[in-house]
Image (cartoon, rainbow, N blue to C red; front, side, top):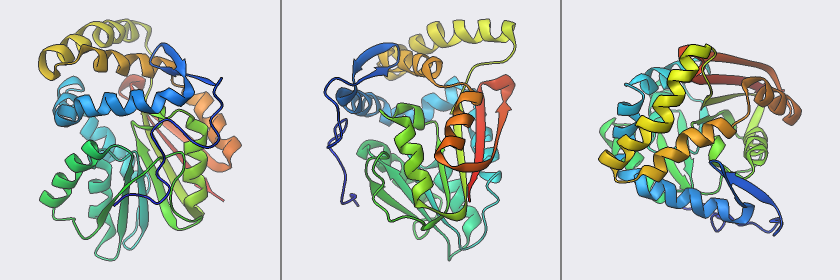
Length: 263
């Protein structure tokens, strides 16, 4: 299913031709970032889950389960999984919602959606998880219809992250819950040095040998370094309107769970 307002990746009526953005450390015109991101995920979609499991030593499954648990979803809730990709968060959420619940997996990349569709089918959740292809900066749903909005390892890929977060706020009901799971940097100096070596040398090498693309797995650590700190992102979310903001570091800060509420 495609959203009615799905935009051409990387473009919108509000684009400023002079506006700049980052793709990893590379500074590019903002209007081009969507195309870069689309090409990036097209190149890795087929091995996305395998590489995530390999490079995180399987920890990403634990992080995702913990993140979904923080939402305390109830049977019958309506949930939107923004940048839902290959559906891990949608599947974990769908298992908690009962037959009356519904998850909308919302992602702009068709190849990633198809990978998620197969996993949802094998999890016997086809009736609870639905797929919508669309731009996270222009979510094609009316305001105030979801009980929870979540995003996992996807918000940093948007051209205008604040716009995507504001859209998640918009589609939540009053009292609706927000969760973002995203990468960050280790808090321990010695562990950060080890992490830097691993992410800038070993990860791209693994990407080249196992996924056929070194560039895609160099973009990952670069994009993490450009992402706001937990304190900065929490401040941004409060400015959007979220309250009861909290964040929890996982595995010495490699990943962070952010939660908030729409009042």
